[in-house]
Amino acid sequence: MLNIVVFVSGGGTNLQALIDSQRKEELGEAHITGVISSSPSAYALVRAEKAGIPTDVISPKQYENTEEFAEALSAQVERYRGDLIVLAGYLVVLPPSFVHAYRGRIINIHPSLIPAFCGKGCYGLRVHEAALARGVRLTGATVHIVDEGTDTGPILLQKAVEVYETDTPEVLQKRVMEQAEWKLLPEAVRLFAEGKGYIK
Ligand code: GRF
Image (cartoon, rainbow, N blue to C red):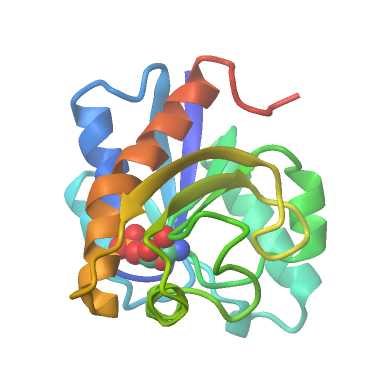
């Protein structure tokens, strides 16, 4: 069994997609053992609790420095016996020492076709605003391995989504979630469960 720990900060629709896939037995030999939120008010916590998944809130604000924050995260991941960490709408930059300790075992979902519309400051609705401003006809989502940079790690999976002339950032965001993100993230977890991920 592959133990998944999901890191969240907000609404948690990607977490919900994982929970639903697990229920439908579509995650293969993977299951979610814990959810860690950077914010106590994240609705993702409610979703986890409703599904009976243990949760914890670990915010960088609670710690003196990034090392202490990294240690708190590692300790909780170990308590959840995590094999794979899934960043699902996680808005905190992970400490380099944490990334180093879990190299190849942290994945992230980003709502664009990387390397377009990604990097520092490009998250949430801003990604879709940038895509519309540039006039792309195709956007999508990417699941990648997390390294020390922002959205720079090896790409695992991508899915394209059409952009329409009438789109607003909100409409486009919803289409990217429905057509790409909520499918891609469970698929990526399944790949790891089948031993086809990047775990060395
Ligand atoms: C998603 O678009 C995800 O790709 C991005 O932040 C958003 C989070 O949505 N990183 P949710 O919290 O999973 O609903």
